[in-house]
Image 1 (cartoon, rainbow, N blue to C red):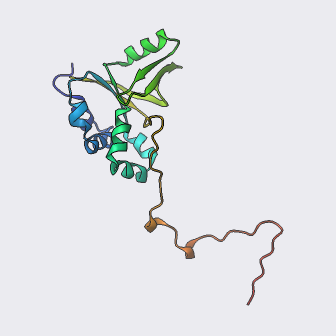
Image 2: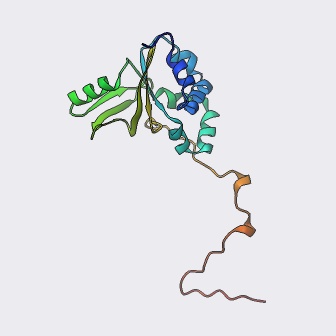
Image 3: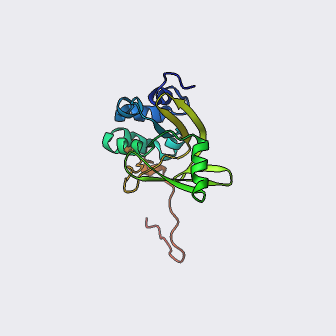
Length: 180
């Protein structure tokens, strides 16, 4: 029984969703969507999913609230879907079905070899019930079509100093002569 905990409460209280919870707080959707009446299903990427993006990408996302908000809203659909609901819906439609996210984009839900996938992510923890919906934890950050994430860049202070770089061998057949 979900009690009075909202989706925002579940996300902020989960040890698996610390980065997602921080992202929700930065984007401000915790107060607007995840604490709202719903019902919603949230496909929340776990911390490992955000780590796979790289620290620089996550930091850049956190500084671009418009892109972050779009990214997060792509993880939310209207209605409450348990894993059993999603599996039944997919099985009834030839092992795949489509849900519309709050960004208006589609997420394909499919069942293959006993795994339930949403887009390119697999549900790894399921059916965290809240008063206004359910959280399904996924192993990949879902990126809506057309959204370009900031790319990882090496910070200037982290570049290898020239004196520490390994020399590159000359191409075959080319001789390098040392002039004194």
